[in-house]
Length: 180
Image (cartoon, rainbow, N blue to C red; front, side, top):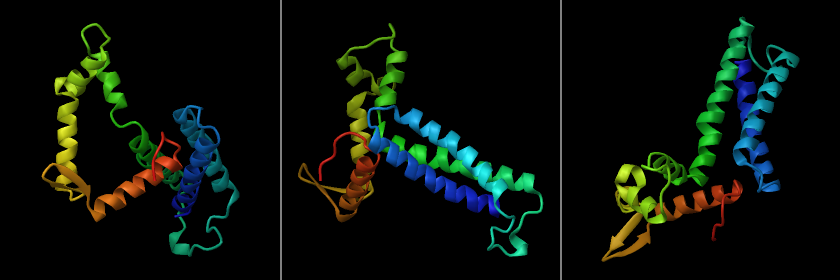
């Protein structure tokens, strides 16, 4: 249990560190900052594990793992999962959307290059940006985030709340311009 608790504390610290670094140095590579934060967090986690008592001063005997090596492995797994499956994905959601797909499509283009119109037409293995837009729009309508009244799209209360949340996340992660 000690390992899990320490991994959770260090994981939240990763989020705080990444956010502070993104805000302080917006021109630096966010991926490089993120990976550096993760590497430092591994050292911090292992140091905390060695320097703290087995019960952390609060855990009952039943929650103390007797096999320290197993507790450390679980802690490393929890920290890695929270970073790669959590914080890094949250950043990707707020910043990269379909940019990487454009790169993949250009890679698979016949001459390893494309034109702006080629990007529009060839997006997602030739389905095109219109296809992507339609898929996204249908998803927003089906999820109840938008209403379509005779071609006029309006946010629902749920949609407005989701937009506010992701606008806040984009500001927090210093990703592009957002409007209030």
